[in-house]
Image (cartoon, rainbow, N blue to C red):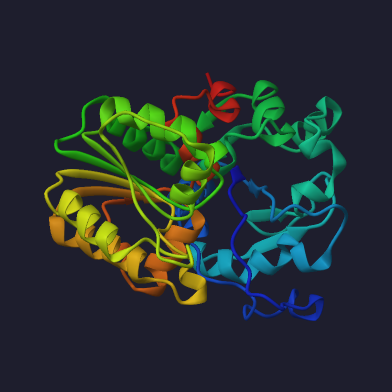
Length: 329
């Protein structure tokens, strides 16, 4: 099972903590979302091999070893998990569930190397994709491996597709889309595609600054917020305007914070979150920073669906084809 193991780490974790401590790990919906598929597969198969990556290592880095996930997976699955640091035959393993080392420690993963994919295929019989957050990457375990084995989508990945497809197809209206964060070059396709189907697209975060600098223009239903003097949060005027649109919505999708909440500029993001929960709308949220904020505020449970995708969610909402999904066809 290709899982999304790229969970956030606390700053300052040391390699000595990796083997036995959970101190360096933040709670993550990504690990929790694999539970149903994993438990189902352990009942179906003699052995479940979980594979995935953490961060973007340039070489083998003990601080980014997936070994540190073992206690978390054991808690989530309520069963023993054995760790393997090499791609070898797993017949000698004693546990029902085996966790492989960070796939990005192996050069063939990111290079989409066919020989590396064949090594992964040699230790398995069936491929299940439960890594929606990595479906926009054309990596060996995402696109080459499923073409070598019988394959299927995991339960959570299937729901990701259904939920996001519903947003683009026939959402209850008014439908409000909220796009925040930064990196306007990655958000333009999302804003433009959502503007075709949403009643309103609300744009916040650092994006209004970038839009102004580049003199960009969008459809009339795209409302670009204004920022405070130091540009680290949306203005009070935008908070009020966004809040009014959101409060009257029947469907909301949100990706990207309204300000740099990690530096204390949280008013805009909190206003949006409160308006969504007060609206009673069907609400879908995604993006690592946004989910982190909501988790810290203990608001995640108030959202209808939490997407594990950051980049994948954005590309899906932009109408782009995701290589990891294409490989399952």
